[in-house]
Amino acid sequence: MTKNQIHEWHDRLEDGRRRYVRGYWNSREWTFRVLLPESEDWERVEKPDVELWLALRDVLFRKYQRKRLPFKHLASVDAVLEEMGVKPQPAE
Image (cartoon, rainbow, N blue to C red; front, top):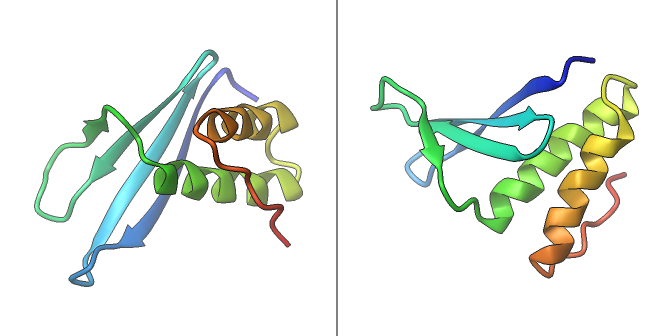
């Protein structure tokens, strides 16, 4: 595994358009960027909300189950969620 990793997923906006999201791991911290349908460039998310962290955890958990990701990345996201007062539910 490389130190720097990019994990990408998409979700739907209220009007049905797709929003693409990237979570970057740079060996110390997570950063997020989003691409909206009308934008040409990825925009940095300064203060990610709980939903964004939970979506990242879901992506990482699925990769961990397939042995494509070390547990420490999943644990780092869980630690951030606990600081935010959210207890992540184990995915089934």
